[in-house]
Image (cartoon, rainbow, N blue to C red; front, side, top):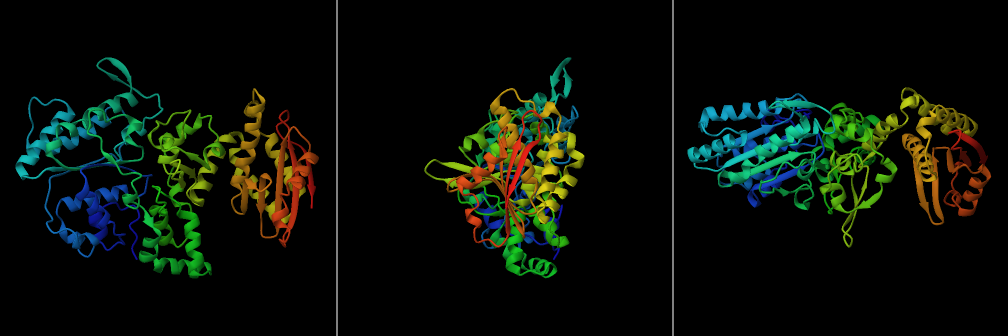
Length: 530
């Protein structure tokens, strides 16, 4: 099989015999039931391929769709004037690039359809092109805009400025102003438009560029189109049974076990209350091409705008994940330093994991192991910045100790690691903040220990356990206290019955009571009971 890794051209995928997951039945439904749409999906999730497929459909290239679902649905195959804007591949941190990008496209179309002399702005010039294209072809126009929000995201939360008419302006404001003027054309040109699709990462309210624009139908959480991008479980088993079998043979496991490995690593995205599982296509295709499980999507880069946002937020990761939210909190609300949740969700690092119909609230958490491990590592690297270079090697030493049942070595590792964190990092003004720092430090540490089964803040019948780590030969139950005693910690493990679920477990069990000192910033008391 040939895998279209990095190929976003529908024409090339079909023409060169790459595997194509047929989404054309959904596309036909989309184009016949509406006119102006917006779709938000994480990066490398197939948005550009969707746009390319729509472009070829509206150009009437019937031969490319032979044998696909739409071949039996579409009977007319009309050709429309198609105008495609792709904001990928440009660096919009450079002043003037956005205007030049839009102007370049409009100039090329004006050569074909003519230019109205009195039309000065980018929006009015494009409106005239749409009018002329409609008149010349006898058919209304199709406008496809890929990554519409990139000109804003590139400069989001930066201090880049430019001089406009002799005055200094923030480039973020300038780019937003340009897009606002350009996108307003869709209201004036409504009678000349057959179909419009805008794709991006952030929902349109995030960048506030659509004033005066006929609001698009936001299908980002529409149950009908949740599988428009990405790969469902059914599609995985239908199109990729061959590479799954090859991977199973290589790893010496059954096909069913291989499917479970792929599911834990790459599945888990949900885009509506229907909770249809959607796999990350970029990671799956890379895994099938190499027959190796790796963190392909996360390793392909973290958006710079998200790194900037997280670098000075006061929100802790453990306080964001595993909670139910009203959709307004992560869909409609504008992301800020104080409220980074919308950006984290829309960028694909959190996804919907449950839905409560009565309250209409959604549980948000990590979609899969690839994202969880990568994102926690990213956040931990910044949080433990003075120790960044040695965090990975320290985690390996901790894993060795866990694997070997060396609880005294664990104490030494925790003590040395925590004592190296500067006082300025752990200095907190009040008891609540000290508690927050204490819990978050251990939350990140144990999230990084992802090789084994780790339960952080696990709810049991009689209380919430701080941490349980399960290895093939050992089970560790940790109870951490801030400025208390190790005896108190062990007593809580006993009184709450935290070890009860492991009474018939053949593995050796250790109960560990540990005390974290807010004064020294490290372990001050540590006791173990077998």
